[in-house]
Image (cartoon, rainbow over all chains, first blue to last red; front, side, top):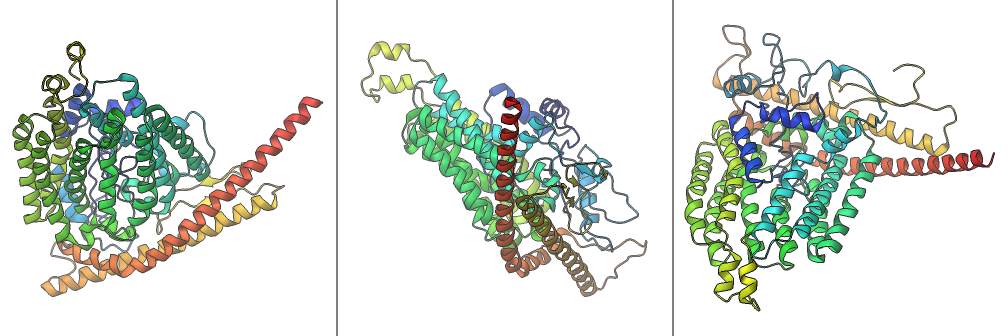
Length: 440
Length: 147
């Protein structure tokens, strides 16, 4: 059965409206997440596992850990036409009971009709002129670059920046964030450019600008180049070459490795997880200029997080993946899919415990984060054992709030630079400088 | 699309392939390059349409056959007492999805290669056409200024 995890506001393309609608969303968890994020300014990258695109930040995440899944998007409920008896209808509110019912009914489509990808709105059924309208352009480019996903990627990068054990520099922070955002826009646009016919066939992605012909492929590529080149240049020249190199590598990994690999082998999930792990590493290297253990740990945490997040999501999208020709673990190796998800939930506990050893956080971090890590591991275990829709949903929604909370706790437990000064860990720090340094 | 229009028109998604058909505008003084571009796009559209229509039809058909055979094995009929079509739950369908994907993998690999090649070629031609048009416009501007 087809199962749409989120509601998408398709009719309105203005970004401000989207956020307004976001706040009105019925889904409490999402509201909490949004509100929480807004308050704490610690955004977590949303892994959008693209059904068709796994854009990892910089492009979606596995099947887009960062990609495709846009937590903040409101998707129109797509309902398969199940029978003439029950008419297809669209609704903007999502209730789990209705989903279950619909899912049951649509599980076996035996109608003689074709496979409709989703409910058609009246607007959809009209012929449209393929002319670019300038006032539509911002909205179109926003959707092309998956702006919300990009925002989440940038949040992860700022988390990496914030966790680095150096005094906070605002200009560096802003340059790193901007550069990463531009690189992410570029990668997402190229991803959509590659995947037009596949996106058309999947419910989640059939309203993308290139699919609807709102923008030409040439323009999409030009936009990607005009974001990517300045973005990487900004990172290389304005921040440091290491961050620029990581950004360029991530774009390459996402567009040239992950995107084609999605249709060739299940290895795409692991590649996608790396794509999602790189932004926080970039944030760290932007701050410190070097790739040390702390950066790798932060990347490792995000890497591990991708798996329960994505695998749980992909469990409900098996039909679309199968028909669309995407090689995902949930379709071809369901046992592996659940094992890997559980394995990485447990890995998160381990990684959190390593943090104090590397002097990134105090010993309080593993202690405080243990409850949420245990909870997600418990849901991971349930998913592993039960292998059904409800357990996969629970695990997925848990992952949505688990990451922001984990990063927030990490930040609050960060080992202050002052402490390190006192201990004499930092070389060449005078007493006066120690006094002037503030806690980030 | 109206007869006086000077641009391409894109329509609603096709029932079988879920792809949106495009009607291409043929300008009266179409250059050889522009014609190559249009023909490439038409050819790609036709090829995509063929592939996906056939693929989706096969999916639907095989899904029905699978459901039928599974229901038969369970001793159930296609329609129960109330006249509703009997269904299988997601876990039972998982076997079918796995099977279908592996059977069609080779077909997809071939299609992917073709699609990427076509996509690059069309975009490159678009770039050439845009460049030629831009140069032509600049020359026209220059002439206007000189007049």
